[in-house]
Length: 322
Image (tube, rainbow, N blue to C red; front, top):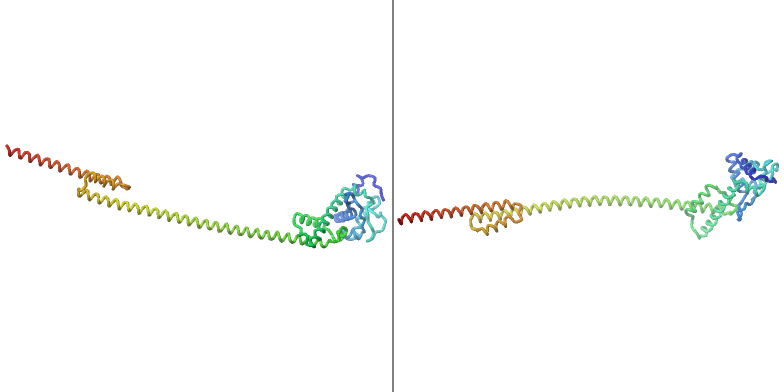
């Protein structure tokens, strides 16, 4: 076992060793160290040795590629993994970290350990939920838990080999998660359908209301036009009736005046009747007054003639007496 003398130097070296790997190698490295370390209940790092075969299953790669990555960290002068360089390895060879302090000095590993701990907690929650659902004691997951679980599956890409380390009910968990996702998507599709139906119904209702409003507007306009026409016709009929009544009164009055049967008081009454509530009040008054003046002139002329006759009779009688 190699004694780690300088924390900063060893941390830097670990970083450099990892950077020497290809992108695929870096992912395999991450899977290896996450499998070999674990966070305990007291939040302290715990070593968790595993065989080359198991590490390959966890990383979903070949054993040769796992050995290639492991050799980078057990080479001479490094010895961060055991067995040390020169020791033959095969499928059943157990790989382990050389010292627990590795989990404290390598920041990247601490991050991986925390990720693994969170991943395990999500998986254990899912196993419990799947079991309870199978017993009919709970329902399928819905957001936000469902979104968290789906994101966990996408980012962590858990496998049966990985899950067996914590709980063998991996297939039951995947079935539960798939059923939850399917039910959620169906519900969302139904919501969209319902929203579309409601939107279509709302649009149709708005169209009907608009059409009804237009029809009512036209009906109201037609009714108003008819009312105005009827009102106008009623006014015109009333004017015609008033005109006929006026003409009748005028004719009667003129007839009475022509016959000379009315005195001044009666004429004034006739005048008032003719001009009352008539648009031709002034004209009617002028006509009546004209007839009245003619009668008065005629009366004055008759009186003058009578006076002349009396004067002639008086002179004749006086002449005869002389």
